Structures are given as structure tokens and as C-alpha cells.
Amino acid sequence: MDTKAIALVLADVDGTLVTHEKVLTERAKRAVASLRSHGIGFAVTSGRPPRGMAMLFADLALSTPVAGFNGGLIVSTDLRVIESRVIPDEVTKPAVERLLASHLDVWLYIGNDWLVRDSAAPHVDREAKTVGFMPKVVDSLDDHLSGVTKIVGVSDDEALMQRCESEAQKAFGAHATVACSQPYYLDITHRDANKGAVVEFLSKHLGIAAENIATIGDQPNDISMFRKSGLSIAMGNAADHVKAEARVSTASCDDEGFAIAMEKFVLASHE
Image (cartoon, rainbow, N blue to C red; front, side, top):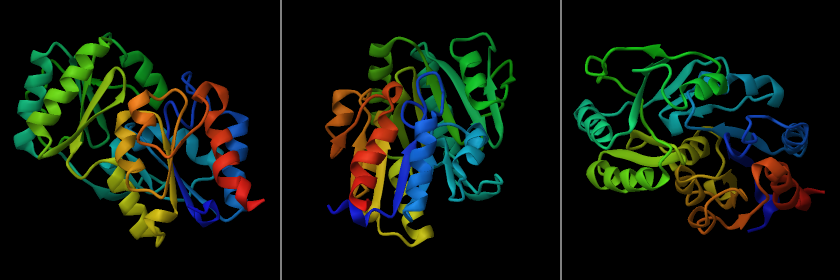
């Protein structure tokens, strides 16, 4: 497509907009500012809760809706809820039970609360530093299985995660969206809470045709937005099957891949 037609860029955050160390580089900031100076909008979507992206709002001068939980909760930049989609209660209990039976740790997100069973469990401390707030520790998840926005299964066993992703998609795919947002995070959200639906929401909300939206990401949960947008860009750190779903690829997130993609694939034709 003619990249002069791009009117909006929708970016994943972790492993895409920021480095693996969660750094938003100066070059990335300049790329977003340059998009804006050329009349191209910029929006973000992530498996993170919306408040876990708030540290980016000022640096990027964001004004577009922010899609957290892979689209499960869409808010304005003052964190006012625009749209919310929770997992059906009849899905939550069996999904949690399946993940626990597969020896994954399980987290729940309900509204603004992040619930864990053990604050010392793998990735809890890292996630808290990433999103900027601490979880609530509960003895059991059994009393918290209603109104859940996102279920996360956690393990550093990548083969186990891939197997659990496939099994959960088969078991719950008709009623929920199931995809890994990181190699160690398996996200389960509402059926219509996925990044492809975020493209559709922004298209309608902003009056921009989906074919005039560019998307960029690195994980399996980004594939749905690749399939809905006019230009799809995979990060260099993406797995091969994710790259295969994108129109073009860029460098890794640790090598300025986001900024390079904006400069090469979006801004070059506007100079």
C-alpha cells in the first residue's frame, strides 16, 4: 500500500515501543513526535493494565484512547473508562483451574486490582516494576472469579507455555481470546478483547479506515492486529511465526527497531 495513506500507528509496548529493559529511548520519542508533526496519529495497546502504561503518556504526548489488557479495558489518558470487556464468569473458573493444573502460576486482573497468591512468585517483582504498582496478595483465587478482565498464566518453561496456549485456545477459544503476550505470560481475555478488535475500535472511534492504520508488535497476541491493519510490522525480536504474519520486519527492540520502522516504513514517504 502507499504508506502516505497511513493516518495512525498502533504500537504494542513491551518488546516493541520499549526495550527489554523497559526503556523508552530518545530516538523512539523523536519518532513519535515526527509522526505527529506529519499529521499521523499514534496509539498504544498492551497486555498491561492501562495504569501500567501511564508513565508513557506525557513522554509521548498521547491523546488517543489507550487499550490495556489487549483491549479488555480502553481508557482515555486520564484513565477514564471508555469501554470495558470482562471474561464471562462461566469461563473464568475452568480457565483458572486448567492453568493451575498445568502447573502455571495464575494472576487475575479485576478493575484496577492485580491479584496474586504469592508476591515472591516468578515475574511478580519484575511486573510490579514494569507497571508501577504492587499486586494484592490473596490466599486463594476462589473468591475472586467474577468480573475478571484478564487471567495470566505464568511460567518460564516455554514448551509448557506453548502447549498450554494451544490447549487453552481449543478449550476456551469460542468464548475468550487466548494468546501469549510474552514467552512467559499466557493471557486470557474476553473474546472481543484482542488487538484486532482494538484496530476496529480505533478505526470507528477516530474515523480512520483500518487500511490506513499501521500496526507494530512482537508477540503472538499482536497477530490479530496485523491481520486487521493496512500495514503490519514485526519486530526483529519476534518469533518467525509472528514475522510471517506481518508485511515487513524491522530491527529488535534493543536496536531501535521501533524508531527504524517508523522512519523507514511510515515517515520516509512523507519527507
